[in-house]
Image 1 (tube, helix red, strand yellow):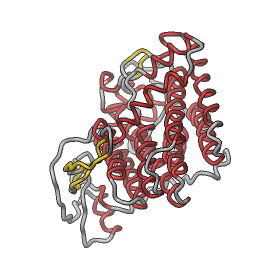
Image 2 (tube, helix red, strand yellow; image 1 turned 30 degrees about the horizontal axis):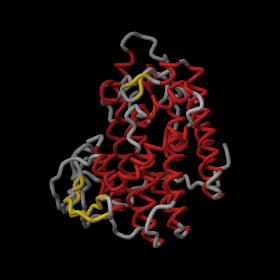
Image 3 (cartoon, one colour; image 1 turned 60 degrees about the vertical axis):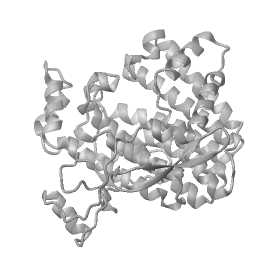
Image 4 (tube, one colour; image 1 turned 135 degrees about the vertical axis):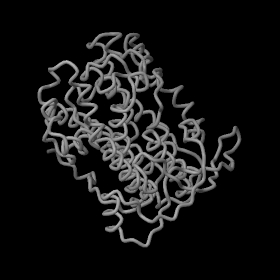
Length: 416
């Protein structure tokens, strides 16, 4: 295993805050959390606070029981005695979350294609296809939100050029990884559109991904910050490690949850963690804050990956923008499958046969759903979300910190 001295890969599963239990109901019940939130809204001359009532879906839990007792009761299906304060609201939307940094994202969108470079029409066309395929721009938005939250701590009045360049680099690296992922997985659809390799062929797709990795590395070197250069360079190495781990464990029904989480860190959480830490580094805040931002990104990234893996079983191909159950049919065993295998021996037989019998994939999906794999994966996502919220406590209350919290909650709402 590679040296990971720069990462804190604690994948412990102990719940430390009980805000994330769902009112004694089933694990996909909605969560409640009441607060009146002031969100900053961009204007041409200044950022002003506007009141927005945000009754978030996490439960405020108050109980005289000990944590051990609560865990025992939840395991036995006994609703703990909770004192809840609930306030209704609509679901969180990315549009509302990102309105704080809408101007920053608009500038990023304008710069992305010019950064990729126009000297090669084929590569530019491939870049336009992937950049224009409806991406959420979550990673650069996180860079901007953390940048602005930590800039307040550092006394900066505006984002630096380095902040903005980091967001562009992060999105390029993410895009390059998607192009390569689609080649490796032989995926024909991404976000409801044809993938680059489907449109232009595998050769062009691989070269387009390589080109964007190289271009982002060049811009990264020009930031001339050794800490961030090491941080982002490690991410590119992690991508390769994640793909190798995944390829070496296909159809392996003995895969451990810890191995799944490590692979998920390499493939998803590493980039998000580097994004949030890098943003804090460029704000010039204390190292304890930059490390907390790293932990926030890591736990948010793991929660996002677990939720994505749940949705692969619970959403249709139209909703996913790719075939449902695609991970399972390719032998990539995710959290819902790992949990289901603990209870259903028949599932192992189907997977190890590599779905050789007609209808076996649909049967496997139904087994995952029927024996608690989805519910236990939901609890895992909530645990990681809980940790991410705690990591933000080092920041002062601000609209940007609240938006970072809501990013965590938005992710959980995808499985409600």
